[in-house]
Length: 194
Image (cartoon, rainbow, N blue to C red; front, side, top):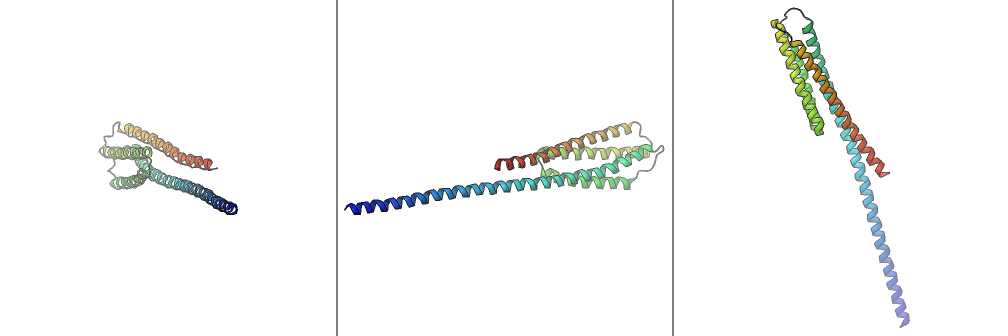
């Protein structure tokens, strides 16, 4: 009977040991899988952040370039108007070309607004609004120039142009901060994984 009891205890000990080993192995495997899942999720987040930064950077650059092209044409037209000393008929073709470039910039601005974040979206909309006003100011100056009644309007248009330049600098600073923030976020995550 002792032999059976000892055998039974041995079998139960072996079964208990095997069960305990299987339990510990299963827990270890679950931990390893969770750890791998966290690492994969982290890598996906980092990759998404990089992708997001690249998209934003491209959108911001496209917007600034389109706005710059429209602004250069608008400025050149204004300078030519100011340099004239006698009335000249309104150049509707030139005004239409500037307006078309402004519309391209406005479309690029919509992409910036979609890409965000909110601070950039607001700054982009402010910049578009301010430039729309500046284009209108130059058009009105051109109309006054054609009528020979510019008076002191040139100074007001110049001040509006300087305001636009200040607003563009603000936008660029915000855009740079947002792009750097994404990089800092990715680097912090990379550092936390190590």
